[in-house]
Image 1 (cartoon, rainbow, N blue to C red):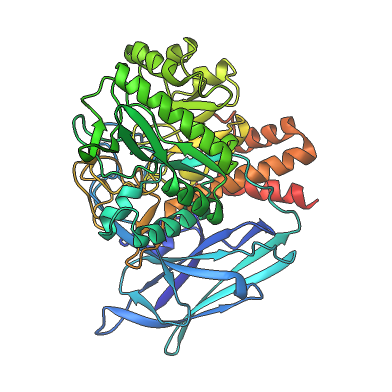
Image 2 (image 1 turned 180 degrees about the vertical axis):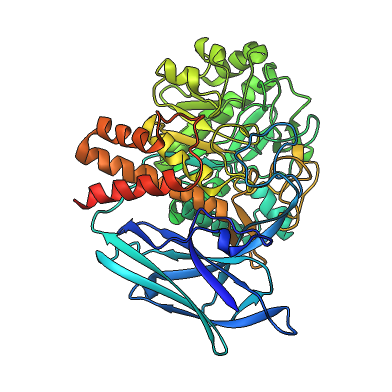
Length: 548
């Protein structure tokens, strides 16, 4: 016998779970231009002499032309959570198979329903031009011989439209990981094709700012080691003088704009965790193509100071010719601590006058460091943002990564989908202007010591909890497979936009009050209401008010 049930998108169906324990979703609303996602859970029992049933999938709805389907596959997770640093708001903390990988499904093909396993498919409804407002029924059936299992969802499309995303959102885009995984030459024509595919995927995940490696980013790199060269600016040094070529940078910018990117995050000009050294810099010299700066280079040395000023001066002038300089933001060093204040200030002083009037921003969770005035635009972690909010730091960003594993929202595969999605309400309530996450497609081990296959190793060789290092998986054709946790994050961004739309009609105080009422207490970054009730209930109330 085949059993089916429609579930909210935030559900996660593990293979060993029972469908009877899942709460069905019977109706939902959406704005006319948003992306609605939901799941169909299915299972089979009492199958004679076969490990699976092969079923016909039928979708009956006036919305059918706008519905796409993906199979939710489970992926191996060796580290779902840090063993001694997590809270009790995880679905599981044991190694195993976790649902996340989305494989596009041709609905004309049969659906395999394995015996005594809980599986699910994700369905999305979207028309960028806007759906016609009204009430629709989506009926999904699995037909196996004479047996039919049906499930229905009532969808109310509201005439209001989500406003454009104003949150700046970057997830670090790792061009070297693409070249390594697909075994193609860096900046070969095939590499450019793959980069374009993944830029498009990033935009579909809500990314509108892209890490732009004018120099090879000195990120997640072991001391004394180097990642593959993805430097976009060609450098020539002759008799102590520098000249620069921008052909690859121009192509990268054109491609990003074509795919829908709006902002450019210029890669860090000094090494991570304190700006003590120069990043890897490659140049044509009298001796050929060689590394001229790196870990052996003191960031405050006369040679590097002279170079980086020449480099930044030329870069800013070129960005102006491209007409995108005001769409760019610059980094000094990622996550400096108070012990590295002197080296950070020294590094920043090297280029501060050249970047006057431009955004200089860095991940920074130590408020005492910010108080020194060293960082113009700090990006504190979501579990360290409290002092920054209390002191009303303007134009505030935030981020999370592997360290934000207790109390706050995150995107780990072991967390409930609602815990990922709640971030949208938090970003709205605290008027956060930007969000950074370090891993759109980081497919290396910690410190980039060696590559990993993200289809079989979701934790970067026990580097970080699964889900932290990537939003997408590699498809064999050079395109990206999306993930369930990326869907939940995109829904968070849509929630933020819907709340902003409601604010334009009712005012900010009333919308914030609505959020806190639904949460049962004032929502904070460290309060993640459990279960789907908050995120789903809040959106239904917001949508109902927008429909009035």
